[in-house]
Image (tube, rainbow, N blue to C red; front, side, top):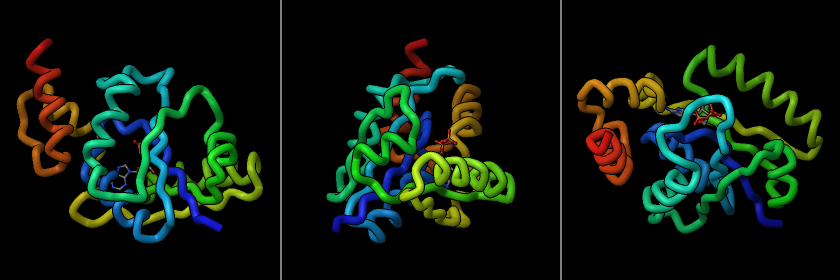
Length: 162
Ligand code: ADP
């Protein structure tokens, strides 16, 4: 049976850290599905549709990766309906670990067949987050090396249009 992993997240925006996790996940699983949350609490820089389009471009070279919007549904249910038996998550720090551990336990409670697989962030990316990059960009800082080119371009366009 095909081993499918769901990689859920806000991806506001997708960084090279996320892309690194996706690339390594794509080598482990038959298929990786990037699930873009529709975020209700946090104000998003990009809409879910914009994120899907940008991520699709950033992962176009990975033939076993696809991208979809996760509507207001539990991740555990989304995984079940996609036939995904694995959740892919990245861990940068002890802080991430504490948070991810609780979510993984809850997801296992909600869907006993679901196994969360954690990949340690690569050292060159383990200090970056979408929120830090957005903050630096707002004030004109250069974080190009931490973003897929298509995403860096889209952020600059959106920032300059404001
Ligand atoms: P969420 O809102 O669920 O935290 P994110 O988009 O922030 O969504 O992150 C999605 C996943 O990617 C999480 O597992 C997170 O720990 C991981 N991640 C975030 N930044 C990095 C990075 N720089 N390197 C590797 N993994 C990362």
